[in-house]
Picture 1 (spheres, rainbow, N blue to C red):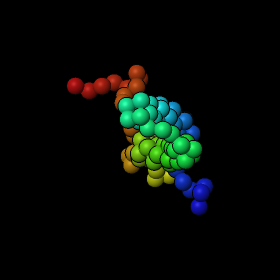
Picture 2 (cartoon, helix red, strand yellow; picture 1 turned 30 degrees about the vertical axis):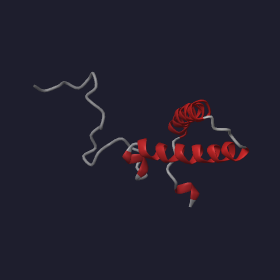
Picture 3 (spheres, rainbow, N blue to C red; picture 1 turned 120 degrees about the vertical axis):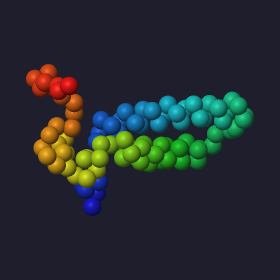
Picture 4 (cartoon, rainbow, N blue to C red; picture 1 turned 135 degrees about the vertical axis):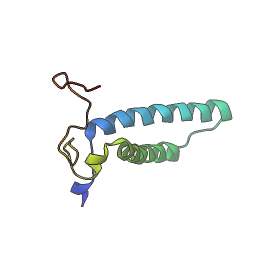
Length: 92
């Protein structure tokens, strides 16, 4: 079951970096702006929540073909999904 879950390590780590930075900003606002005192449960809960949120955001930004299990970047006609290359001529 777990082997079938879509996962892209490069997207996940980049997303985790952004989530951690946003978490630090949120903690700073809570502590300095509202004089909140962090407890040990906050650290544990935030760590678990950040990892889960990172995976969900990672799924959201993954290309649709990776989510469907088709790792090729071709459409039904076999054409590349990316724009024209230097060897291809563009028509007016």
